[in-house]
Amino acid sequence: MQVMPMLTDQELIARYSEGDEKSFEILLHRYKSKIYTSIYLFVKDHAQAEDIFQEVFIKIIDTLRRGKYNHEGKFVQWAMRIAYNMCVDHHRRNKRRAHLNPTDDFDIFDVLMHSDDSPEQVIIRSEVHDRIRHLVDALPEEQREVVILRHYADMSFKEIAGLTRVSINTALGRMRYALINIRRMMAEKEVVLQ
Image (cartoon, rainbow, N blue to C red):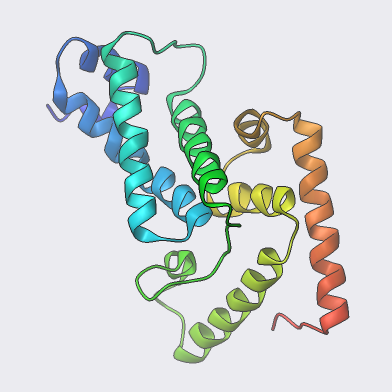
């Protein structure tokens, strides 16, 4: 079964639909980190992110088992849309804004650390990331959302546009304004990133 990890998402879905549970495990393993990270960045709570993550995959499994999945788009885009919608629902229910604040257990920037850095470089990078995190957190919600999806969830502008149900130009515009606002805040607060 070593060939299975090389199968496409569509092939894995077809095998899962035929009763091969291992195929779904491989599919889950491929996208687990990306989907969980994007959920966590929106809700900023591990327990809630775990709950939403499980709900996302329950919905995916249910849709696949009922044969309702359509093959028009990529699986990961479809899964990310489900995750995004559940995060929006969660946000509406709790009427809280998502913030980019690290917790004791998880900080997305830990993933970005390089093992060959000196202790001084690690400290400097941590301080820079903290400053950037505060600037991103201060952005208007729509701009913050595009920055999170682009830079933290590593999505293309086409994927962001599809996920947030706006045009690519709107997604690009939101990113442009986010960068303008970050530069403005840096100038106003005299923030230096080095």
